[in-house]
Image (tube, rainbow, N blue to C red; front, side):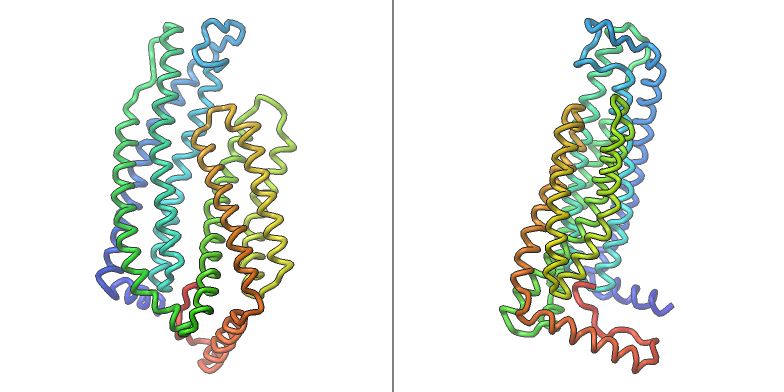
Length: 362
């Protein structure tokens, strides 16, 4: 009960916190409902393609509209689109939870990450429209050439366009309200660090690295899983080795991010070096999947996500290097002092107390 009381107090603390949470919940509800409609319409298109899969004729290339695509291969494209729809809904739900967390802990780093993820979702919505229109046109051209009766409809496009417009509106609101919250919560840095300008800069570098670690955990995990699903659905050749490697990459995201978090707080050079090596391996893996599989299948959504994953990983490496340069310059003492104060507070309250301060990196 104490948790919910405190959560309610945080949400109603100001008009900006109320507006921020209200828009976050509204965005989640509307976006998921619209995306569910889009998903259902894409599933209808997929079912139409499954009816024609038995008519595939790979020998008669004169009747192939696009490259050597058969109805089976077209159906795989729509499977990929459907997976993207599911990914979108999952991240919308997580985004709302992150909004509540940012307000509860008064955490500016999460406010920044929410704005970044929202911008990424706008790109997704835009690519979604382009990809749907492109494949519907190609499939219908093949259906028309084959003189089949049932073609794919474009009734999904207006819903995807509506999703894009709403995402732009909600993201704009998120940035505006997020900026207000950033100013409202910004005094935490001063409270935690004090007036030392150099220490504040080091702390901000640390916070930016935390932000990128969260993006690594959330976005890279999602991108890697989508790549894995893509590989499972692509049965054109034996990809057992690639699937095993991709599975290892998915499983390694959480421990590597955890190691990096521990390393930057403990100022451990070895942990940061391992994170850098893992980041290089992640970049190489993304490039390999892009070059060998995704680009050849005209997977624009996965191409965009993998490129975004590469950029996030590179940014993480750069900020990790900057954070490592700040080791042994006093920031670690701040963390140790705060951890000691937290332990004393908990012990004084018989283990039942709460922390008096909620730092930005909670």
